[in-house]
Each structure stands twice: as structure tokens, then as C-alpha cells.
Image 1 (cartoon, rainbow, N blue to C red):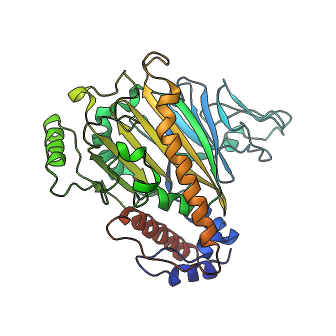
Image 2 (cartoon, rainbow, N blue to C red; image 1 turned 60 degrees about the vertical axis):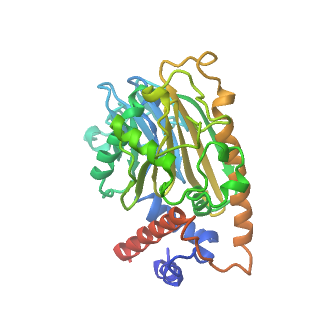
Length: 401
């Protein structure tokens, strides 16, 4: 990898503007992004409820890197590189399952759920099993929300953990279940997908259904300005003891904001999508607690459920968008909620965004593309994302150049 050449692209970038073309299009830039950004950042992988009992596992890809998350016999959740310590085969296929042990399909090397090597047939007498356990991946469990980092030196996590616990407490992450998940293939560079996901400059025209309940005209962290209704909402949240003031770190943001007038959920009609609420304070009229982590994710937590969006790069012009919907663990499908209604709005919004991102990619590919300025009022979070990307990438270049 030519770090000097890649570094030259960042030197060309004008502050407040989008990126040079090569960072959105080149294979070399994509390979750099995976190592310098996704390989160094905290990534949200889902919720602990997806590993409901000892023996449960999740297997997934981060780019071309296979990862597995397990719940071991003691009930602890762990993460590992999904690569056998014998000859490197992927042990568990992508998906979720339950198994008493992890068995490599190639030569049957067998691992306990804590990653230790349990059995390896026909090895020499001096072979030491303890030296050949699965390689661990850093994992943080914030009251049921799971985050991993592939770096051996992960970014500082303590401040984010403390803030997320406080803001998420009303939503009871430990009491959720996964109701539905989906994957959407977008033929666009991951940074274009995320820039789109970090702003609502486009929402009024491009997402008419979302705009019925979602405050698409707000700026940055859903700032309220002098709006009396929104001030009343925040006063009410103070009375409930629910933190709401926007807080952020280098790679994360958290805030609670009011939905449009008369709306208690992000849905077609603004009403709850699940009748078994995660939080019934004020009848479940508590707005949305949004948290986002760079480089890949945002999560909206309303009284009736949680929606998670995650962008995972696959190639220079391909990104897989993963969506997960969580509801109360005791909610009954067909009684308290139905999948079609629960997933309709965000699915529609994602499909609309897919079209926007893919069209954006086509234009960025043009010989006539030149970086353009972000709106200081409407695209501050998109600019913040791009600044994070540049900061993280340039730090990697300095550390590895």
C-alpha cells in the first residue's frame, strides 16, 4: 500500500468540502480505508439478545474479515477472529446459531466458546493446545449493546460507555429481542452511503414518508432553537430525569430529540409500532434517543423499539447496509406488532437512500467531479463524519508511514 500516495489525497482536501475523487473510487483507497478506519474503530455489531444462551454465536464479515461473537458456558460474551489456528479456514459460516463447541470444517480442530483450543487430532506430542486458541477481538457490552474493535489498541471507550448508559437507560436494552433484520446492497462507496446517512438536507423531498414524523428541518444534533414546543419537550424530559442535551466525542454522538407534533414514534402515522413498550413514561411520548458511531452506524431508540443502521464496505463501489429492528422481549408478533408495519418506514427510507447514494456515485465517477462545500447549517454531521474520516486516516498514515 502506497501510504505516501494515499496521504497526498488527504493533503488535497479543502476543509469544509467533500473528498478528492480517488478516495471515493479507487481500489487502493478502499483497501486503505479498511485497514486505517474500519480496522481501527469501534463498530456496533448488535445487541446481546442476539446471543440468548450459552452456545449462541454470531458470525459476520467486516469487509473481507470474518468475525465471530459467542456466549460462552459462563454466559460471558466474547469476540474472535473467525480463522482456525491450524491453516486459517473460516470456522463458522456467516449467520447465527447455537453450538456446544466451534468445529473447523476442514480438519476438525475444535474450540470451546471461550476461544480455547479443545481438540486437535494427529498433532505432535509437544504440541501445546494453549498456544493455539482463537485470536480475540476487543469487545464492549454496554448494558446489552455490543461493540467490537479489531485494533490491538482500540480508541478510548470509557466516556462513550458512561454517556450511552445514561441516555439509553429508559430504553432497557437488556429487555429487547431481535424482531427482524435485513441486508441492502448499495452500489456506492461506503463514505457516500454514510455522508447521506449523516444529513437530512435531502430528506424533505427524498423521504416524504419519514418527514411526517421525523424533524427533517432540524440542524446538527436536532437543535431546537427558540421553538416553544421543543423547549416544552426538553423540560418534560428533565422532569423524567431523561438526559437529552447533545454530547459527542471524536467518534460518537448521542442526543434525545422531539419528534414532529403529535408523533410518539418514527412510523407512517407517528404512533407506536409495538404496543408492548420498552418505556411507558408519559405514555411512551419520549421522542427518539439517537446515538451514532463513526465510521458506520446510527441507532434510533423510541419508546416502542430500536432501529439500527450499519454500513459495511464490500468493495470500492459496493456497501452492504444492515438493518435491525428490536422490540420488547415479551412482545408477541401478530398481537403487539407485525413485521410488515414495523419495518415499512425504515425499509422505504433505505431504498430511497440507496437510489441517492448510487446516483451520487455515478456523478462522483465523472471526469467533471470536483469536491463541493457542505452546508454549514444542514450538513454539519456529514461534515463531522468526513472530518472524522480524514483525522483517523491521517493518524494511521503518521503511525504507519
